[in-house]
Length: 92
Image 1 (tube, rainbow, N blue to C red):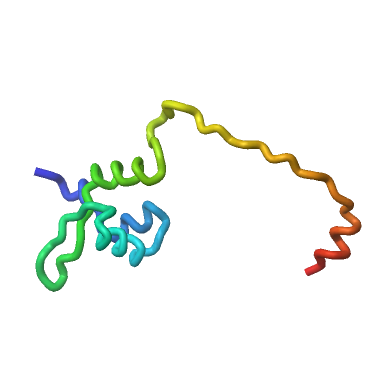
Image 2: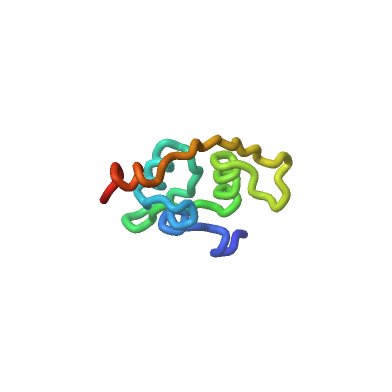
């Protein structure tokens, strides 16, 4: 049997993913996040930690300490410009 700590509330999922609770509910309605839908007026949804880990890995990439392939970052060349001109044109 699962312990109580193995299940997350929608509020906890939202905090974990740094999105609103409504965004989490929309993802649940769209079937992106598998849930346990509890019956009754105050039932709500519960998301298993294992399903949450799978969802995060699928959506955001590998979560382990050692990534199978390092991410490749592109460097972009930035041209220099006259700071005096920038001060005159970008005043706040």
